[in-house]
Image (spheres, each protein chain N blue to C red):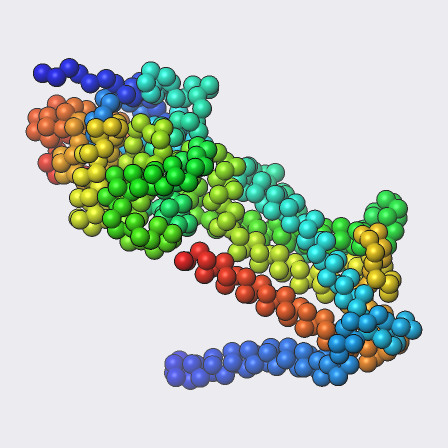
Length: 279
Length: 256
């Protein structure tokens, strides 16, 4: 028996619509719940003063600074390495077993749970290299963690640049490097920026890889060799040790808003690049 | 009788392979300087492969191998010591589909000169005006050189591409790969007019699917079929009394 199209259509709209609604509702609920519990505790004083009494009192200023310095350091380390690798894989080699193995490797690396990276960072950077818990150990660990994302998004973006652009560039007497610099990279930029923003979002919220490598000091870091605490680690410690639920939620609210802002910035930058190209 | 013009490019028993398959076999031809050489033949006859061999663009295609000689002013461009980058500045290429790079009209035109290290704004400005004028585009775009090349029409983009080739000061030979296949008759007429003027200065090789176009603008014409060059001669001879029956069949529209 065939069901009349009118009914299948109505069914599809109902089922697919409810699935969408449910997803959005859960997401909204989590965000509103955290914001509702946390926002009352957020004030300028909370944002810009140092924590007192293990975070039971005071604010999160050093933690805010740590939360932005650490991912920034990770990006500064991972971006040149990742984009360089992507350029090499796409422009300087032919597709061989080796490049396929490399690509498979990066995909596997992307799927490894972050606590493994944390453990590796702890054993390698903190203990073996005697760097201790510090901004640099954490930055390097996060850089390794986000490298696969940066490589893969950059690679996709570079592959999406039309081959005809490369042919034109070569036919006008450009070398490979000049072609990469003048034609390939500018046109792959929006994709590369997306990858960077995704990685930034991921590393801002990262806890496991950070707590083992950057430590959890509450002081303001004075150099790359000082320990820092990020918002997610702060939130974890406050809640876990039962120090202050109020401050934990306030920190979580700031964290959610920060990630939201990063995503908005990514969106804005994408539009900016797109508009600039169409001019 | 005027004396026979100097030979610009001499192709000697030249063959191209894609992997195991032969794309071009045993082509021997002399291309005279400052004339238009038309190359005609049905799809898949090897004419584009032949054209792309002349500035070694086939090198970019994986698994492609060339044998034999292509002598440009007597020097083999496939010899290991030959500088490919310098070669491509002397032998420019216009592709079938216009590809304006996603940058301003001005930057499109000065792409080659900038690579050659020309920095002076005054010189670049001169190059832009000279090249766009030669490509019959200057009057249409002179007030909006900062606009993106992508916003021009297809016919204008193809003339921009021609200007971009002409902007190279080292340029001696222009290769055209069916440059008018996607263009309207007026744009086509402008390109053809530009070519007949440009041959005073450059050697031009025009691959075309449109036999009438070859008859209109080419001084000499070569006919390719299934990876071989069937025959080559003055355009009048090829189109009226060719030696080979297959050439006759093709130019009279009996096949292809």
